[in-house]
Each structure stands twice: as structure tokens, then as C-alpha cells.
Image 1 (cartoon, rainbow, N blue to C red):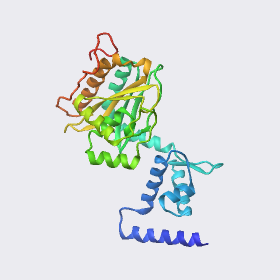
Image 2: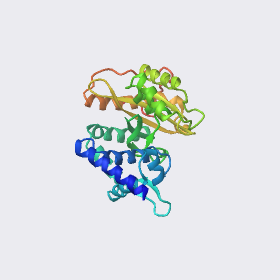
Image 3: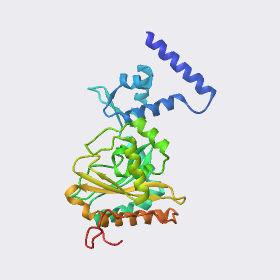
Image 4: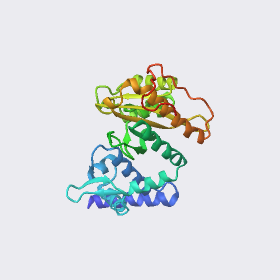
Length: 292
């Protein structure tokens, strides 16, 4: 009874607030908060856990979940009561991606790169401090370690180092303070200053390397895509198992990846000359990629 009264009071307060201003509508904002909470959680959550995290009543949270579930945006397992993000979000996300100029420009380049390099290739962007895989291409021989719409911690992957370069130091520190620097392997960067050093190194050499930082046995490299103003807006990464991507082949691979990103950048209006310092890798003729 008491919970019903509290819930009624909560809804009445929301209604009064919504009537006073068209935006933001609190119920919509709370629904968005539920989606974000489910996205950020590392496991499915019960209604009571969601309510606790968002400081909402259980009944109000349950009703919002029911509404979201009816639209396919969330899913609640009947047996366990745990809540998941729904497949409807994938459909909406796919439609949104299909309307982006960057994606239209990148798709043929990704297809060409995966054919030339014969390894996993992906396009990623930074969304609210997290690396989101927007498009991905894999070969039958490369591991499908990351898939479309995967969200990857910024500090533990090559694209994260590239994309973080578009931010100031204070913004990077704030993101890492909020998200943490969880170790996925012994090689994962767990020190903010170490990550900042990697970002600065990228600014000088034009590429970033992830050497078993997100998962054991896997190596990734990434190069940037620039917009008309010279801002880093996306990254393309290539990766695979260590035996398939030996360090002695990295120079040729990076050169091909760099040229692919530059093609897209030119289409976006970029006219600058991005750095590519391959001094740490020997570029040998006949290694994967060659001249583009």
C-alpha cells in the first residue's frame, strides 16, 4: 500500500513537471536511463536492481520496462525475471547507421581492406566515451572477436587510443574516471597516464596498437578518419590472432589501412596530410597489403 502511494506521488510529480515544460519529459528520460543502465551493466539486471540503480520505485520501473518491451527495446526473461536490451534496438541502430554519410563511404573501403589484408576489419566511433563498432568485416580465417554494435572499453583497444585523440586531457581523464580501467589481460593499460602517453604517441605516429590488451592472443592496429575540419571522427582497425599478424608485417598492413582511411577522409572534405611514422616497423615488399 505504501509503495502504491509513493508510486502515485512519483507519477503525480512527473505529470506536474511534464505539464510545466514540454522538454525534457521525465518519463521518457527515465526510459532512456533504463536503456543506458542495461547497456552499461555487465550482466542482466532484475527490476529491483534497475530501480535501485536509478533511484526509482519498483512499480514505476516495472511499468516502464513493460512499455519498452512492447516496442522490442527491452526483454525480460519470464523464468529468471532478469532484463536485457531488446533486438528492436539493433533494428533501429541499423537504420540509423544506414543513413550516415560516413557509413556509406566506409562500407566499400572496408570490403576492399578485408580482401587485401585477409583479417578482421572494423569501423568504430566514440559514443559517450565508449568505442562502438559501427561496421565490421571478418574473413573465414579471422576471429569474430568483435561484432557489429559491440561496445569496447576505450582504454583497452587500438581504436580507443585513436578516438581519444579528439578529446582534451581533462575529458579523457573524466571518462576513464567514470568507466574505470578494468584489466582484461596483463597487457591492459590500467594507468591513466599510460593511456594518455599512448594517445600522444598516436598523434605523432598516426596509428595505435593493441597488443593483447583486450584479449589474449589477439592484436589490433587502428588508423584515423578525419572530417573537413581535421577532427578525428572515426577509426578503422584491423586485427586477428598473433600468428596471423606478426609484427614484421605491421608496416605494410598499416600503410594499407592508412590509405583506406585517407580515402574516406578525402570524401569527407579533409585536405590535410595525416602523419604515418612506420619507423618501428619494417615495411617489406610482398607483405600483406602492399601499395594501395
